[in-house]
Image: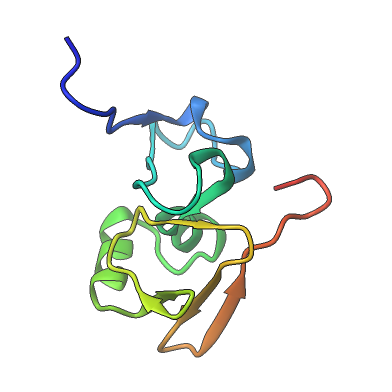
Length: 108
C-alpha cells in the first residue's frame, strides 16, 4: 500500500540529459516539486556536483546551499533538489558567476 509520493529515483531511470555515471552508485537525486517537470529539469545537486564540479559529495553540496550562496532566477534557494529548468539563471554569490541552462544540439 503506497503512502505518498515516491521519494527515491534509481540512477538508471534518471533522465539521460543529466549525464550521470552508471557505475557511480545506485541512487540518483530526485528533484523536488517545482516549476519544471522532472524530465525537463536539472536539480541543483546534479548541477553543482556533476556538471560544475564545485563539490565532490552530497554533504559538500548541502553546505554550499545552506549558506544561501545559490540563487535561481534571482531568488535564494536552500533546497538542493530544486529543479532548475530551461532558460533559468543560476548565480553563485562568492564567485560572482552566472550560468544559464540551455540545451545543446543533442538536447542535453
